[in-house]
Image (cartoon, rainbow, N blue to C red):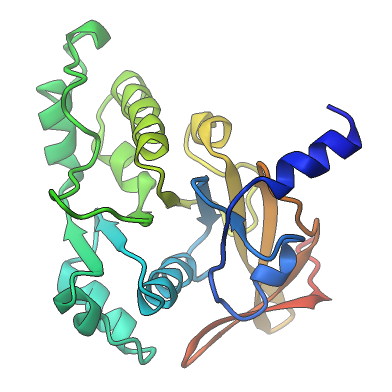
Length: 257
């Protein structure tokens, strides 16, 4: 594909605007290509969940449907976290725009594989069981999974079952047409962005969040490492977590070395 053809292919993509201050400006088309599956990777305290919850809130405020799947925190804790930033999650839950689900990762593995010990073969997997359950008549345009790390932590094999689940999960997102954000835990300054590396291969995009120590202070930063079908800035920029949520500063570069 030459440069002209590549530019045309980018322009054909529909764009999802996150409405996070400064973030959409990192893309030449003003947002994320719709339908992409994106890893949101970072260590503790980098703001991964806050970033994804803010995207959900911004988009349900604009009439879109969002499904937030938590494998660790309870529904009430997710709601309280959103309310701490002034985001009225309950309003949109009652309106049927925001769906927050708490799912035990062990239940998913048992449902799909019969056990978590890895005794069954891959061919015994029932492909009729969806990786996530979306209620009938609810069509999410955004899906957040918090987090993929919880799934691999729950798996005793950390290999076969998880790989099969991941392949199905990414295929499932593609079929729904939703733009998905999948949170993964990494080192504070990561050199890899998922537990196995398979996630990085399957994902359309990778957004990396940093918590960088600068002398006696810490600084949050964000980088769009990869985004299929979307031209973006290739730099690490300042990210602030304020009492009202996340702000991105596209013109303020941050060194993580």
